[in-house]
Structures are given as C-alpha cells and as structure tokens.
Length: 162
Length: 131
Image 1 (cartoon, chains in turn yellow, cyan):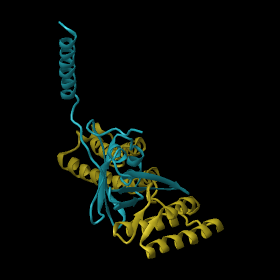
Image 2: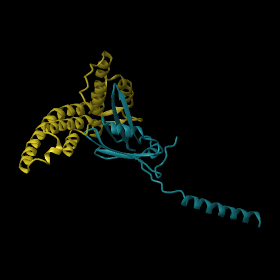
Image 3: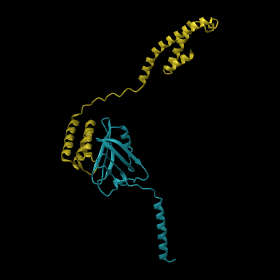
Image 4: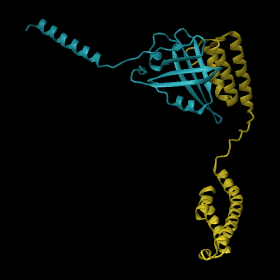
C-alpha cells in the first residue's frame, strides 16, 4: 500500500503535498478497515474477502485523490511554464515615419525603374532609414535586396549598398 | 677577409634567415570577394576585400536595432561591382553577425532576399584587415 501511495505521490509530480495526501488517505482507509494485526487472526476466506474489499476502497480513494490532485498540479505546472508568445501589438507609424516612408518608397521604386542604385540613392537611404519604422524599413530593404540579387538594379555605389 | 667577401657572407646569412622565416610563416589564405552569378550568395575575407587593388570589393553584415525589432543585413560586392545581399530577423544570425571582426571570412547564402546560411570563419590563414 505504501508503495502504491509512493507511486501516487510520484505520479502527482513528486510533490510533497501529493505524497502526504495520498498517505493520509491510505491511513484513513487502513484505520477504517481495522488494525493490521487483526487480519492474521481472521479466517483465510474472510481475510481474502476483506483484503479484496480493502483494495477496492483504496483504489477508489486513489482514483478520487488523483482526480483532485492532477488538475491542480497541472495548473501549477502550467503557470510555471513560459506563456506562449503573444502577438506584438501593431504600433501605428508616427507622422514623421509616414512621411519618411513615402519618400523611401519613392526612392526604392525609382531606383528599380532606373535599374541603378547610385551613391546619391544610398545617401538618401541612409538619411531616411533610421526615420522609418522597423516594418517599413525591413520591407523596403528586402525589396532592394531582392532587386539587387535578381540583377534588376546594378550598384554604382562605393560603400555598403544599403 | 676583405670587405667584399664579408658583405657576400652577410648577405648569404641574411638570405638564409629570411628563407627560414618564410618557411615558418604558416599557411596564408587569400579570399577575395566572390558573388555567385545568380546572386544566391557570396563569400570573402574582410582583410582581402579591403586590401584588394580595386575599389569595389567589400563584404560585411550590419545589425539593426529599430523600435524593438532586430534584424541583420549582409552584403557583398565583387571586383566587377556585382552584389548580393540578404536580410534576416533570426536573432541567432544577428548574434553571430555582431561577433564579426576584421580577421574573418564571411560566407552567406540567401533565398528570396532572406539569409538562409551565414558562416563566419576565424582562422589563422585569414588576412587581417589593415588600414
């Protein structure tokens, strides 16, 4: 029985609380069934019947205990685990970011139309880039990168292109 | 021993010493910037790109921190002016790119403009970047 209680305790996450409650329930079950030493004096048939009944009662109490304990423990475990990443709130661009974004968009489209990324383009991009929100900056940078890799624009710059 | 013989002897000793020095210099690799013709990737050593005889070669990565977002942009231009670039929002790439120093060799691959591979090689054979 104690081994069973130990297993129940371990199954409940090895928590002291789970183990203690399982042992308490088993103790109560054993007390209600009478003293242990009395079992040896009973007849073999009666002992078997009582033991079977006792085992059934213990099983039922264990089931009840596990039903109560496991959800509570799962809840505790869940609260300890990191919460799933929540989507970042979309921050509306500031008026300056909007204006810079429009200028940068025009710059990028014009360079693709011209098929060339000049030093002047680069200078303007360096000026506008830090004023863009991360989404717009990343989006336009990717547009330029894809255009460069696919040879839709050629470089006429000396420093890092973008 | 007259002066001429002494000079010859000293020159011979100096030549032997220089020769021995060269043997002990270790392996040196030279990796000028190579950009794949289809723009799918590039590689090269920072030191060799900088010390190349042309004015176009370059390779590097830039990390951005912008409004709570972090992303990295890697670029390369070969001696003919052909370029390849990529961007990534993967923090692992950003962390690696931040560790690049002047003695390293960079190799990146991209697909659709996104960095799919970044290799940063620190080796004794790389040419150190010099002014």
